Image (cartoon, rainbow, N blue to C red; front, side, top):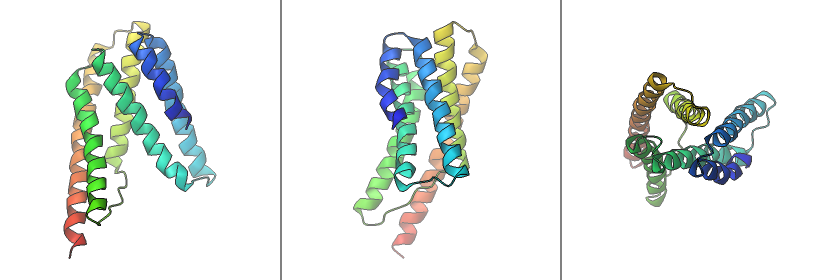
Length: 171
């Protein structure tokens, strides 16, 4: 819940050109996500609510930050469109499967986990370079293209799984 509640503050910080603050808040959110996941697994504290809130918090935070960075011209719009479109396609596929009474349970693939990590890394790097005047251009470009490649690969895995599920459900 804390990560979801941080979203408007991080968006405000980016929109107000307070990139150092946005970086610190985003870093705190990323660290809290890692600690939360570790504690849940290590001490068997997984809950059904947490299973829904964790990926929701990740998506709300990442999508909000990418959209705000894109609107403010800090990152290219094509990477924003790619990242956001992936999430819209996944949610759309889940909703469609429910509407046709063939609900699909989406489990994150390792590629999707890597994708999320790369998206978080890219956002952190962008916010850090903007907030602290660091020149990390070659690394930023490399990570941005890594995000693009992993996003496309992740879409491919989800689409293949969804199509397989939808075709087998009627048999």
